[in-house]
Length: 348
Image 1: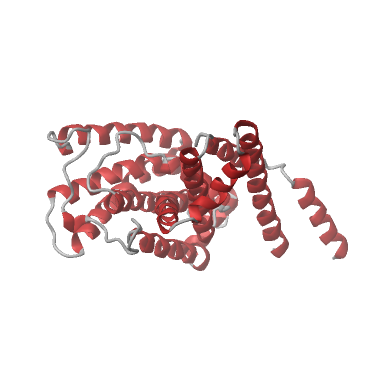
Image 2: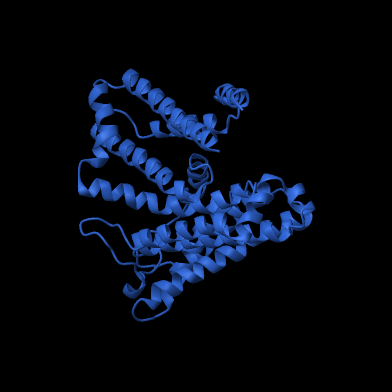
């Protein structure tokens, strides 16, 4: 077991290094000062308190969606519906933040719970379709993304929009609904504490409870789990409920922690990024933290590089594409794993 984990760690590290090497080669070809540009990309995010804060701020929604997607992937459900749920739950939380008046800490709690519960209910629909009629969860979840975006945009335009603002944004949130900033000089908010606690709970659920065991067994071999007496249909619905709750909480926390109005007129992209975070984390909740921080770090680095050098930030798309390509390629470094297994067999 130790060697298996060791192999996956080496494999993921190799993928990241290869992607970075390719990025550096591209920088060397297009930049007039490649050494300086690479230095900006690698080290500028650590150059100030504000830049470090930017990395953590971006990592918070990535942790939420990465955790949601990793739960689904762990159950062998290739569901990408976290994108639409993240957006729509943000709309729901915004409506509560605008139209409700609650004192103390109760206002953000109610708004976040409203978005989370709506996210769980919406996510259950593809889960039920999969469990009862074996509908392809990828197709249904992608369709739901477009549906939820359309409904959310309609609510923004016709129910929440501030006509006096010079942009397509909602009315301002009540101040009591906003999440507190926890580190002065940055926009890091209490959502960081929430997501870290959620990750620990998810790890405990997966590896220390009967339901988590059934989820993992269903993902490993659904037929075997069913023949062993596990109710796999309920497991599939349960994991969709949990993932929708987490993604919905992420969207709610993001709008209340980073904005004073709802202003997303397009899908924010965090749901699809969550799939990359989950892949890098190998669907392990605790590893989601490092994966989200890594992705946030290179994105902030790319943004600073675009502003301070002659290389555009779009280069980060190349890094992400290479990572996805190699992580998803089952044969990558498989020969080395086979040699390890053969060596273990000979020693045994």
